[in-house]
Image (cartoon, rainbow over all chains, first blue to last red; front, top):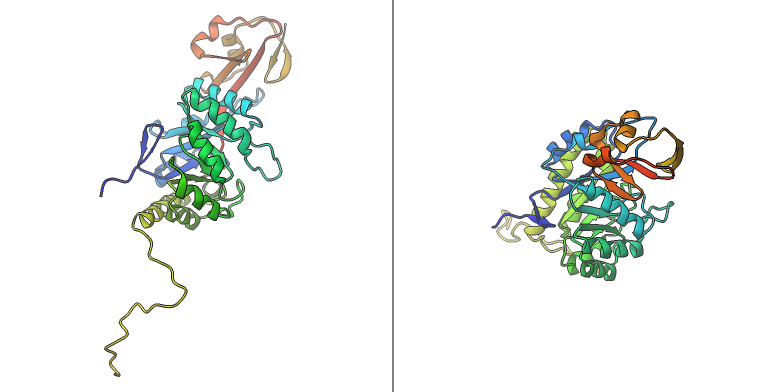
Length: 257
Length: 65
């Protein structure tokens, strides 16, 4: 069997767990989490400097071998997302961008309409665009046509740890998309990450569930193993389900016959 | 002179971007500077003299998902 790799934007990933840098109690845990999980892509956000506080440089905690995926969080329109993406690229963080446009502050649902427009613009400018969206097949096909490098449907609301609530809609994307499908947001447990991979997702992106675990380094490892197991199960083709019981042992040759 | 930094109007003496960054005690390696909506690479901070009414965004990467 040839080596199972994921290629996005011309980069080859041998690990299918993408991680995030948000919500760590101590940013020094990030490097340990990356090492334990094997994650090769990690998100960062761009914000105004607090002039009174100065602050930490998050990039110090991320090894150069890990691909940075800046997000456009804070953007409420396509234009704002495009502006943030351009700044991130100019800042030397590469040309990968996670488009995240949120207009709804209650549920934090991504705005698919604005996200499509931002994708159209940024793909033309040579960005490797990974749009974070509600799982909607026609939209995913539009994103593909617009030049998205992947589509990232949510499993459940951001930070909710509720798992694959949108599983049946994600399945449509997995079945019909040419670009990789990365399940982003809502995955709370390694078993849920494994389930996403068993369904045929190409990768998962996990932040909150790892960063806010009591031991983020061990949880990173658990997620890394779950993603690997789920992927292996998908490639091995899962056995069929059955409504009725089917004996696993032969039904003949019993000792008491 | 008056310039807008991160959306707030600030009073300050004339200076370059480089001088402003030092004066504020910011770590240059972590900083992204947008001057009047154009990104200025660190190598050019010394060349840009701030003028009355200019707008600056001083940004950095932070944790995010």
